[in-house]
Length: 370
Image 1 (cartoon, rainbow, N blue to C red):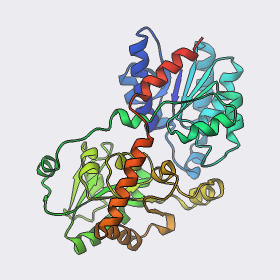
Image 2: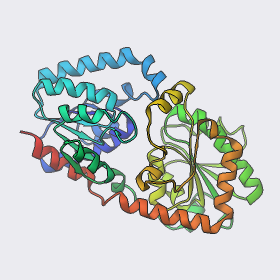
Image 3: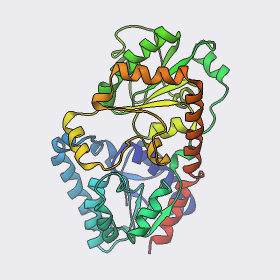
Image 4: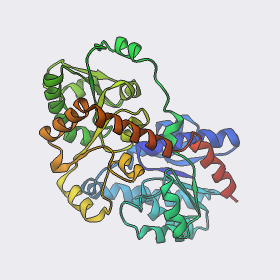
C-alpha cells in the first residue's frame, strides 16, 4: 500500500512504482496516488487531488474530507492486509495513518521524510515509534535520524532521475523566438493555484522593470496544468512575456536569471546553475502560524541544502516589486556576485547525490517487506 498526498509525491512515487514493477513484476500496489503512479501500474483508490491542500487555513476547511479519506484507507488496510505500507511525504496525514498501520503490525517505510529539521523536531520521536525505516533525499538528514535511533537510508534525490541538459541555447532561443543578444529573465511561479495568484503579479511587475532597465526578455515557465489563457490573465493583456510550457527545464537552463517560487523548483534551477531569487507569499494566517513553528533561518531548499544563504529569499511582506527588482538587477549587473552564486549552486548539485533514488527505495521496500 502506498500513500502520496500531493502532486510532487505522485511524481516521486511513480518512479518507485516503476522500479518495484521492474524488480518484481508480480507485485500489486494500491492506495493514494495520481496520474503518474497510475500510469506505472498502481491501483488508485483515492486520487492525490483529494488530499493536495496547501496551508493551515486551507487544511482546516478541507478537514472533513481528509478525515473521510483516512477512515476509508483504514478500512482498506484491514481488508487488504498489505505486506508493507510506503508513506511518501505529506507528514500530517501520513504520520496519523502510520499509527493505524503500526497497530495492525504491518511494516512502514517512509520516503521523503518529514522535515523535522525545519519544524516540529519532536516528531522524530513519533517517527521512531511508528516507522521501520526512513528513506531520506538529503544527506544532512541522515545524522538527524541516526542520532534519534531511527533506521535511515540516504537514497539520493529523485529529481536527478529526470534532470538533464536540454540542448543548446541557440536551439532553445530559436524554438521560442527569443533574441539571443538579449538577457532572459525566467519566471517560475509554481504549480499551485494559490501560489500563482499570490506571487505571479509581483514577479511580472518586477520583470517589466528589469526589461526597461536592461532591455531583457521575459519568459514564464508555466505548469502544464494551467491553460495559457489563465496564465495570460495575470499579464494585463500585454504580449510582452513569452509563455513557455512543456519546456520548463530548458528555460531554467538558459535563462540568465530566474525568479523562483520556494519549493522543489529551486533545486531544479540550482541543478542547471542558473542564478536566482527565491520568492514566497502565502495567506497571512498560514504565514503567522508557520513563523511560530518553523525553526530554521532559511526556507529555500537551495540555502537549506548548502547550510547557508547562497541565493536571496524574499518572503511574505519582503516579497515586493521593488525588492525583487533590486535583487535581480544585482545579479545581472554584478558579474562577480553572479559567478559566486553559480559556484555555490554547483556545490548544491553535488550534495544531491547520484541518480537512482527510485531504484534504491524500491530495493529497500522489498528488503523490508516480510
